[in-house]
Image 1 (cartoon, rainbow, N blue to C red):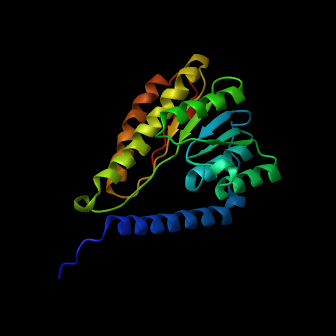
Image 2: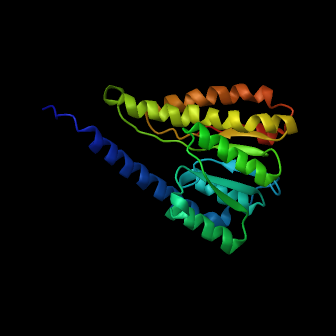
Length: 224
């Protein structure tokens, strides 16, 4: 018996529930083992912009780097005027533990917000950023024949073109100052997202020769 296809909004809701559950499990697991995680070396005094810091790897990276002494600019797609619970929680941790974390609103698909956020981070840092971590990304895992084209376009706009937009905004000043570099870590759950991840992994690899004057440890591109 062949079941009728589910409405798109129902399929998307199920995906969001699954992804939210996976992210919650990841954060819970990381929290349990946080005491065993060594602080990062070589980041003290560095200015780092992390996109997609509301949850998952971006949220953990922002706090982890700040605990190593980095000046972190943690960006989220919508801060809701500072009322977003994830933003409030990260700000609370920063205040309580004396971490240098600045929250910025940044939707990587909005060119104006990309430029404004990078400019604000550069101004606060007194110049070029030392590193940018392109973590913002979305994922929908469905068989190819069920993939919604609009949702797939949104994946590429966020995971691929969003990362390139942030790099375009931040790299010129970084290159002039011979600062560190960019790392990309888009999610890789499901077919369309794997395609988008592969698409950004290729230009990330191509950036390596361009970033050779900078320290090797900061040039490395991460694609998970």
